[in-house]
Length: 89
Image (cartoon, rainbow, N blue to C red; front, side, top):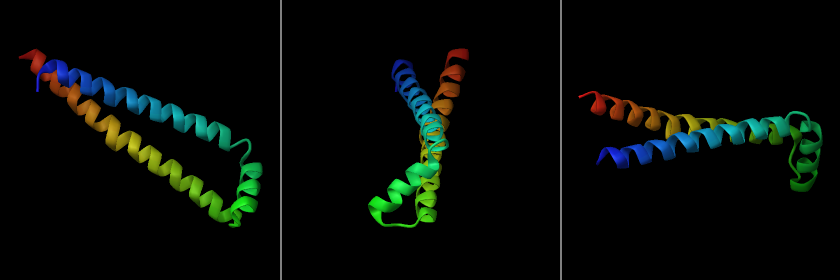
């Protein structure tokens, strides 16, 4: 791969991580103030207990955080360091 294609891939991964983190922050900011209302509505619509709804939300946020860190951020940083090393040669 050329350095230009590595830069493009790095930029895509790092921007994807930033978008994912922004989505996580937005999700938490929307969920926390209205958690009782969301839990009640979801419990009634899907006929599941409020504890299950909370578990699903925590699971979703955990998976999204894992995705942001290990699928986008870590490879993006690895490519960034690879580019820096290649340019230093």
